[in-house]
Length: 194
Image (cartoon, rainbow, N blue to C red; front, side, top):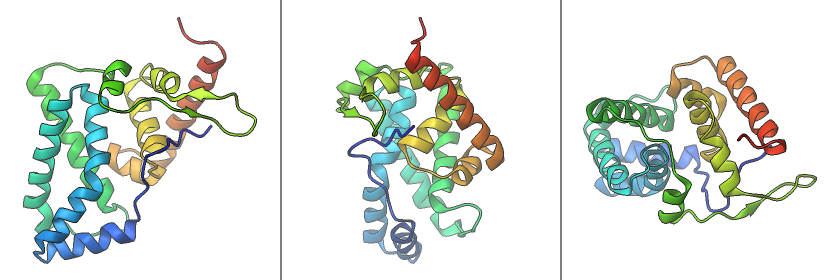
């Protein structure tokens, strides 16, 4: 089952690595380009969890301030790519936000459409054509951990290893949860939940 969406960009780790090195060297223009390359993905990450454009923008702003402050201390590691490191920070910020606000929101598809993510038809050979709206609606019905894994894997295009690093899980557990989530989604596509 492929959930790749039109308009979702895949970023080269090499390009991000070069920008990161330049930004760590004090080049503000490199940090600006790094921000521009990652901001859409990270905004979407926040918005899909908060359902509020203003709060998502505020958290994105706070995240990049934190990134700017933390950048000199970041050291590239083979087991934790830069994007995984920044998503860990983003997850921590979300946890702090929810703890502070003492509330949790799950994505409303109407709010997603209002944010400019109009659904488009997708599908693969042999599959019936599905609306993105239907798939996203089903994803929101998954338990939180499975929802995060499906979002990071199929909407953000991350590997199981990157997701494991972000969620503090073992890659095998991420694969298991992803498999379980896809099995549920397939079942729900055949017999939609009530």
